[in-house]
Amino acid sequence: MRKPRQPDPDVHESDYRVPAALGTVAWTVALIVLVALGDGLPDTERWWIGVCVTGIVLGVFGFLYIPRLLRKRAEAAERALPSTDGDAADPS
Image 1 (cartoon, rainbow, N blue to C red):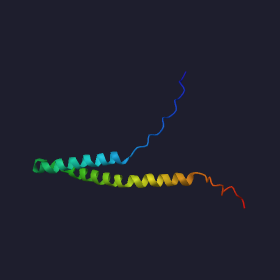
Image 2: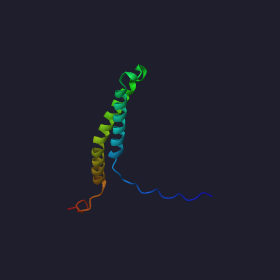
Image 3: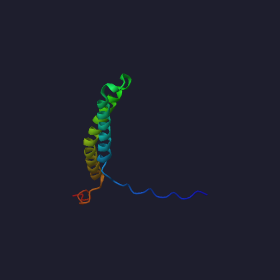
Image 4: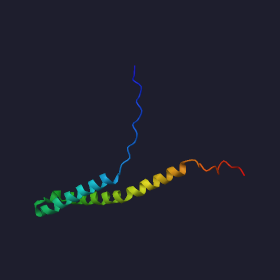
């Protein structure tokens, strides 16, 4: 006999910009290390510099876009709620 399914836990909302910022900082540190290596970095591994730059660009984009995304989702959720002022129910 199967156990009854437990209810899903409540969603814990947090500031999603923190992981985006931490990831961007990590890619920045990696880029600094690669650039500091200079000629010590083999030619076959120089593509990592492009990966780091791409990570930084996407991290900055995400950091700036996340607040806009959350704001748009909140606005859409407000529009989806039924009107509570009674105007929609008044036929006259």
